[in-house]
Image (tube, rainbow, N blue to C red):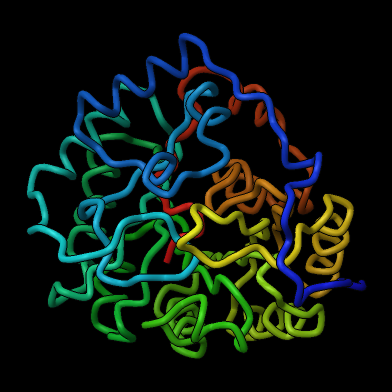
Length: 324
């Protein structure tokens, strides 16, 4: 799998990254519900390219613990700085909104809160418990930060019983210092490995961006490291530069190459893979989880998935586009 010109900066978006932006009554309704509830979404804060599609299909991507991150990753559009105190009413408003929209798969993430003693673990745990208590049969998927490697914070989150634990590796080891300052490659892998040991019945998931200058051999090595850490669910997507202040795109990866990566990842041992230019951390998260739970071969569809995704109130994804 060749990647020509990975050291050059990509100047122009290719045709496959041009999309029609649907906007209709469902888009406006979902946006109105979220704004009335005073909830942040990664869809908007992180400038996710799937914003119009997801809102129009009655899905969204929420962000807890405020909208200000304590880290300053080179790829992420979420603002950074000194965040305010956590809002004790946020969990209740989130669950009220999930109930109002009739959601059955809720994916929750946060900005990174290195300023908090527990990194926000308590609010993650409270959210899981309240969703389960009030919305019977609703699955909760968490996309968590690294909690600075603190085992007790991860344990607190897992004790709440989320259905899926996601933590993004984001990129290959060589690029970490530039792409994820403040994070550590091995710390992220250790979190996933610990999660598998603490809660072996909870599947772990991770995601990576392509197009930052990574080499194919480095991607393969990272995928093997994820497998060695017990991770079996994977998302691969194209990095898109949010602004001129962010890292430049080194290469636009064509759709057929994402298809090749999907096939290769499945052959390596991943159980479920979403791979494509617009794929993000919680893209079709409910479908990926339901397929895994039902034992359906990766990439296949179980009855009802397509209709559920297109109908009103299929799932609510609360995550950073390439988030933690």
